[in-house]
Length: 132
Image (cartoon, rainbow, N blue to C red; front, top):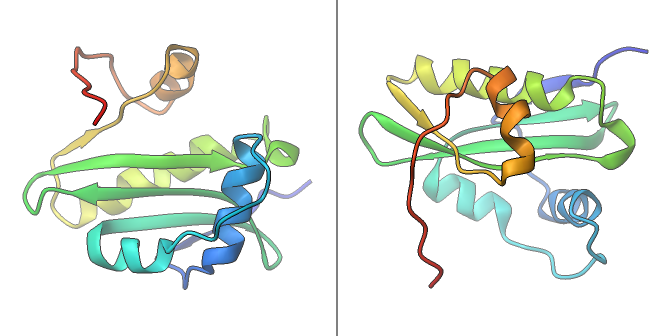
């Protein structure tokens, strides 16, 4: 089986990305979110994984306008998990963020994802979170 093709800064289809997020997080399909507008305004870069024309994985990074960027919304369709797609997405995102001059890449994640992000090269740190 071939790995999905990775595409950087592809033209985002809001409906397709919203459906992917719903599948990945086990939520019913619902509201189409304005992904393309958000990415255009806040994104450093983004990477999608595609089987043909179907979006099966996604990750993006937002920045502070300086040396820091933040990994957000790492998702892989449940039917495509366990094949290294998530790791490939994060590794490609890391390379792209580095290439635009960022020197720090941050990620927040739930404890069950610790092993995944360690495999991707992240080391644990202490951080704070405030729900607004």
